[in-house]
Image: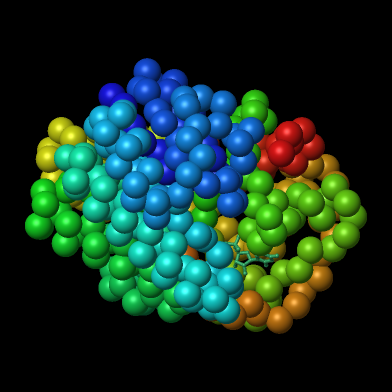
Length: 323
Ligand code: UDP
């Protein structure tokens, strides 16, 4: 198969690109390199361009005749989306529409979409299954939900078959440290914990007064290589069944921020200097996925998503990163 991977120079996209090529598929990565890294595209062909550039999409799609699109070209920062919603609606909605229009015009039938647990907002129950109410509480989550709604509408009107994948907390890196997480600025917990370990400069724990077992927030960390495999299985599934299907992707295990810090100290053998500060706005106390649907329909089993493995891979990357 030949697959267009938009945003394939980014964190989850680059691991997914690697996975598909390891399975024998041909990939073209389209990335404007605004956040992605050229060095992360070690497999397939890299085209530097923007998903909002319809003329470029037309010529690329006419030339390559893709079987499917996997779309990672979204902006991902919740805090930034609150301060600058326009940037998020422009990229995650307006430009995504250009990509969808081009896909339909070039008769591409299958579309896998990076969605997010953020579409659910403050959960009324955990674990969160696919039927849970969708009430995003920030512009980022709203743009992802709109993306899913566009896919539904394009499916009805044009027969586009889609697979929205709602990631919980993507974490970890390739175990050989060839590619890994490299956000700038970094806002995610695990890289910041390991950076504090390496530099000795304290990281901040956002709140220890939540209604959880130790007062800090609980999240469901899922290894990026498990996510990469889920894209492969998801695409195979929708191609086989010719039916759109959304999946929540997490380990179904919750870990608190303070538990994660303790585990990082165990894995690295070093202290994690940290200080407790105010809560961060918009952080739900607990987010845990129900992954039953992905397990039963896709046969997906997270293999690397215990926090020890995630931290070992992330520590290796932190010490050996190339970009
Ligand atoms: N967090 C923290 N300090 C940081 C970054 C994150 O305490 O410097 C907490 C955050 O409040 C949340 C968890 O770590 O409970 C995971 O946050 P992250 O930003 O990695 O992912 P999110 O859950 O926002 O998608």
